[in-house]
Amino acid sequence: MLKDFFKKYGWWYLPGMLFLFVGARLKTGIPNILGNAIDMLSDLTATDAADLYAIALKLFLTAVGVFCSVFIWRMCVIGNGRRLERHLRTAFFAKLQSLPEEFFERRRSGDLLSYVISDTNAVRMAFGSVLALGINGILTALFSILSMVDEVDSRLAFFALIPVPFAVACLILLGQLVRRRFTRVQQLFSGISGFVNESIMGIKVIKTFAREEERHDAFNAISDDMRDANVKLVNASSLISPTVSIIFGCSYLISIIYGSSLVLAGSITVGDLAAFLNYLALVQTPVLQLGKIINNVQRGVASYKRIKTIMDEPSIPQKELEFTEAVSGDIEVKNLTFRYADAEEDALSDVSFTLKQGQKLGIAGTTGCGKTTLLSLLLKFYQPPRGSIFIGGKDICDIPAANIRRSTGYVMQDGFLFSDTVSGNISFYSGSSKEQVERAAELADVAADILHFSDGYETAVGERGTRLSGGQKQRISLARALVRDPEMLFLDDTLSAVDNITEEKIIANLDGVLQQKTAIIISHRLSAIKDCDLILYMDNGVVTERGTHDELMAKGGSYAAAYNEQAEVDHAN
Image (cartoon, rainbow, N blue to C red; front, side, top):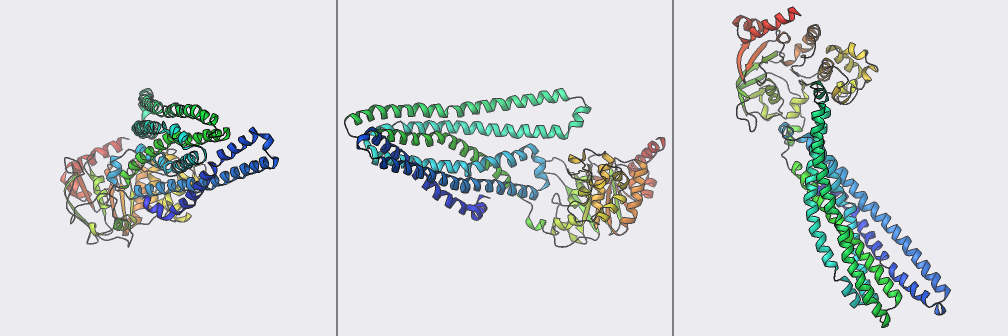
């Protein structure tokens, strides 16, 4: 991940480091210039005005040089940090797109949002401003110490710098404490992000059950934990500056006492002592920043490790994501048995059927009997056992998932919609024309509803389609699948939120569309699948009944009982 970035953008750090060096060297020349000016001003009788003007000009040009150097290295180094941030977020999002379905079942959305926003920002800081501050601080301190020794007095430098290692040791110890507390804050940030996201997504459920107060109390508890963790982090961080200031106070005390004796002895001038104190201030600043640097570096390392745990997750093989050709033909399932990871029982057990190209398969059964699991395996959201599913005579394990999915129109149970317009949701990157979008809406029997919207097909549906009814969302999702004109169509309880009249219209529309297409229709409302060429009735992952509608009704089993019960309810309504 970082290797790819440095290959492409690492060269930006070279001019940045060069001007960091130049800027640090120029900055450490300022105390010497001021010291010379003080010595001149202390003896005006021996000082020429031209010399003072020369020193003033030198000071001005040095300040300009420092300004230009700082501007350039900030543009190179900190600007490259922003490129790194974008690179990480792009790589992270691309990784999420390549991860299998089961990964998202194990992760909270709040955690993933925290990685994208908070953790990438922490890594950017570590490789941007913090990196620049660190190198600038090292160079400034190094040049300052060399100037103390060469231009002022080595003995004074030795005694004044004795407390500095103690300051560095304290900062390292405090930095470790800060890192542990920051990790805790990041964990709580993920938790609170997930809680808020979940509460927003489930706001209707919360209000329906009148649980606003309980949810508010739960949020307050999480917020209290977040507050306490942040207070502990601030308490640890706030020790850094006072600790360094106290220790450097000892350095200043030594410098003034011993330096004054050297001035009185004639070993150094007043200007030299003033320059020395300025050099010491230049050393103190990087040491003070060292706490911030250690803090941010440790945050960056912790965040990078969190990001890397996701980046190291096994992705879907690249060959599965490469589209080569459309898929069509008979669908054959042979003795399919499947169990989810960490599950104790099989989700599907010994399922077999053959569906000829152009035929329709209806699947019904009890809740949780494995209907959706079967579609997920056909679409390769999960890897099925080899030799258990064939499409067009070819083992599905040898067919890229991209081929199957691009050849299939799939409508999920929840009718998920993106925060876009109606037209944008139906076309969904398919490049469909306006006429094709409207035709698909007519087939899904949602065109009339759309025309009554304020902006027609350009009406924004809201996040997850919150501005639409359940039936409208399902029908727009159906239109999204139909607009692609797929070879196969999989409908997972697509008509559960529409009334009987609308259901009949949609089924009549689909009969014409599906004449040359292979379709699998899952439905709890058996009237939606009664005209299918083959119907499977499932219970607890097992196919208990199979046949046409007439054959199953003649058997008088679970299918017939369920159909008759639904027919009585519909007649009563």
